[in-house]
Image 1 (tube, helix red, strand yellow):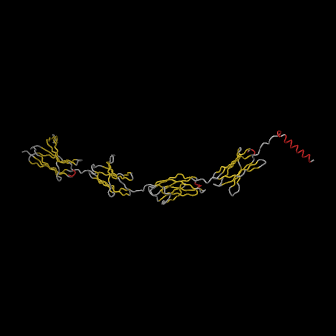
Image 2 (tube, one colour):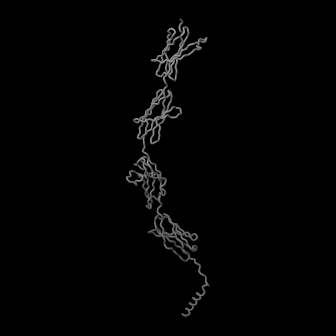
Image 3 (cartoon, rainbow, N blue to C red):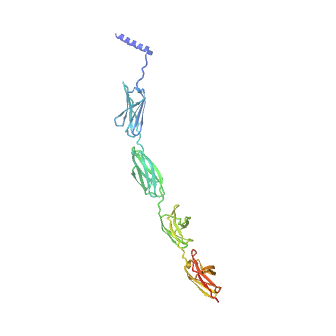
Length: 416
């Protein structure tokens, strides 16, 4: 019986070997993992697995292992031959292990473990940096993008190229809303500075953002005081004083008539911070404008306009016009005032006189005789007059702008 059983076994084995072409090769149905990778960020990771024959997978999941903690599992999403799952709330800059598990109706498999590193914390970025320099101080304003990942920062400046050696500047930074304001003091005028923001993210990774700036020239003070005009009839004296802690030359006066004409410019070298000048050839009884100009660092400044008016020249007055007949001559006299302003004076002689029937002066001839007054009195001898003939005269005077005349005075040379 034992021999028969062996024979039967051998016969069956021989038959199986002798007729291989008479049977079909089994179709593979087991899912096969062909790729597994991880796409991490600082706080998340997306795991992806690719399979052959993924359609036979009934269940699948991914798992990750944070260091020192138990595994975290998440059911995979199956789409075609690809399985994916995303894990949130990870820690930045940490190495995790991960794997994928899958099963069919009859069997279960798990891949070997692999690893990925999450990204470091995002690095904040400095934006909208603006620096407003003064002469001895400066103010910087800036913001951080991704500020929630900011760990620490310092801000300040030092003279360009010194690397901070012998730095005397002082800085203080405050926050106004989402804006940081850094006030820098104890700076040197007209000097280039480096402004640096040195900061780190929560992963203790450092970064620096820098900008150069130049402080302004030192401020100065120029005050014009005592700006004054003292006019006379034909001129005006202008004066002004300066209080300044900077060179303000060239400087001087600008003046013009009230009418919109060009300014006349007079440049004056100050003496003891005071400028003075006299403007000649002005017109009496006329309005003028003037102002002071000065120059600082190539820029010209002017004070507000002020005005003055020249007075009217006094008009002479004629009084005590009189005549005294002596034979065929007559002595004419008259008093005249304001002789220092008189430009012309004398007598107007009237002869060849005729009257109309009403007794009014009808025709006559005038002859002007200039007489220079002496001590306010004019005198002239009119000679060669004819007896029985009526003559007349009047005194006159002018200041060059206005003319005055006395009344006409008539007389007759007595007959012989």
